[in-house]
Image (cartoon, one colour):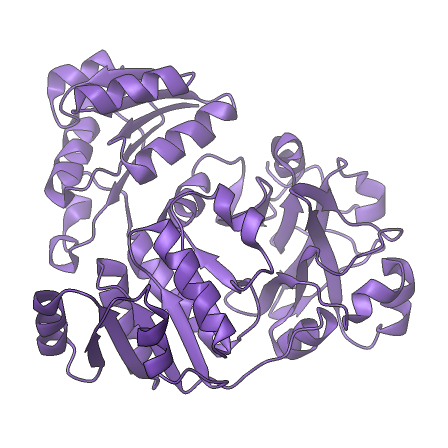
Length: 443
């Protein structure tokens, strides 16, 4: 697939790197010469210096033959214009990052096929993580009827007591499956013989009514959070304040700059705004953090977010979540005082990869410490898998089918489950198995 990425900032460069590593034909357009030069050295992709909304620049990138244009610069208007121009020049599909809600209305008439806002998605994800403390992932599929629950396995977890095939027999009264575990940076797709260890990052699929059982299976304890303390006054912080207050949480914002604090107090009257250095343990101590508090470190600096979470956890906070730009930090710090992480880069990748994968893809989910993906799709009529049981399919190594939604019923399948056309199917796959497994469910 030929893909053009407009804008080589944090999101654009990550997308270009991920897509080019998969063997996609990626062209990047970046106006800043220095940034473009740095990216050209790092990527196996063509980087063009220029204006992504310019006809000449887009033609140089070969937009008429492109399957997808992704405009993710930091300028909403430039992203819309890039999509509009590319649409006129013949690109098959366009995706634009648009943060200002006032600019989204009517953009489909301007050649924008899909709008993404990773920040808004992250804010909603933070609400879900705060409601279900202790988990590192909580991802809904099939309109919320199936849920992927992730977390660091504790020594108290039943998963750490026997191989998975024995545990499935002991806990057969409810539907669940361990899709994968991440151990020391290596992803293992689970099978019956897999022995989960304390400290593993496990990803477990179950139905929505059994999420509490899934967290207990991971050995995690849920705390009821009343107060959310948000560190920083970034755009993500503001979006999260709005989501948290709407969800009924008491919200505190902390920032060292007096002017920013005054602005936040005016914009968000339901929140308590505190001026203070969020890296100062005394400031955190003054907040009297306790077992009903969640701390969200959402500043623009990874190192600050790490420090804040570690100190907050030491002071007794029930849950800590950090915003990350450098994804590699997440796997290094898992289980060391940071319960979960959010990343605009990963959320943007999740939103866009659905247009790159084969088949009728409903959703793609990426993760912070593994390059594997969870994919939701609809099984097409005439697909090779239709009529076969999972065990007969002989799925590629590195693939686990975690859930199926069929005619209003959702369940976790076993080897005898037969695939039907129209099934909403969720599977977890390592990178080298994604295309082959997706093809089984496509026409």
